[in-house]
Image (cartoon, rainbow, N blue to C red; front, top):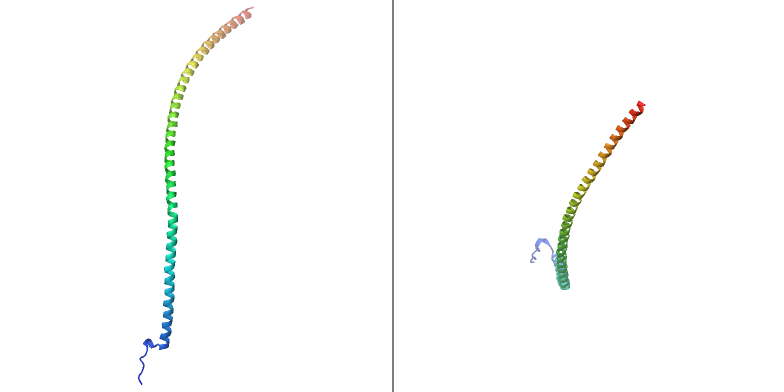
Length: 148
């Protein structure tokens, strides 16, 4: 009797057949997974393309709106700078005029104060002279009254 060659690794034909069935089942499942992945990838790419097609015009519109707003704001900022410069110039003119007015008023007040001081000084001097004459008269009257 001729001996059948022994299977590798000492496995029986039944075990090898069972392993082949399992491997075939695994291949089938892997193939199903691969097909599912391909299908999913196609579906995702389609959704991404649709989303891109839908969002691209909106993004372009938003960019245009932002550019318009930026241009408007840039113009408004420039107008504000001009207004601020005009107000600054006006304030400088007012400050210069007020400074001149203040100096003129100070000169007038200084002159008026000096005039009033001179007038009061003269009046005080006259009053002082009167007081001295009255003091002399009182002394004279006291001396005359004492001599009596």
